[in-house]
Image 1 (tube, rainbow, N blue to C red):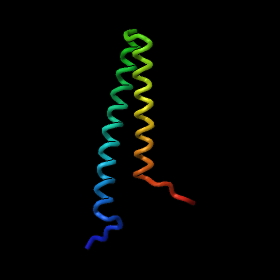
Image 2: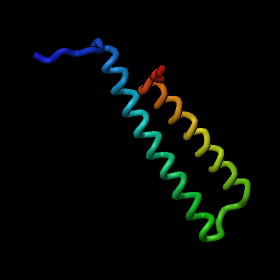
Image 3: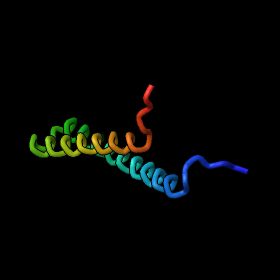
Image 4: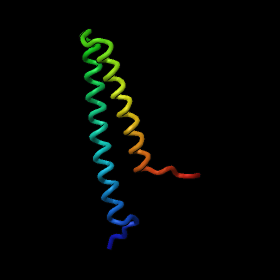
Length: 76
């Protein structure tokens, strides 16, 4: 018999957060690759690159927020 420490609804919510987190991480990686490719080829104006970098930073913040929800702070 398996004992669950979390109620099923909390486990389901955490699983949804983990899936969201993976989607955001993939989008972050894709943006990073796009920015790098544009810079290497000398394509894309500064405004476009800045917009992509801001979006990448916003994704990073959202990823950190989700990670905090999944892994609560442990008070030592």
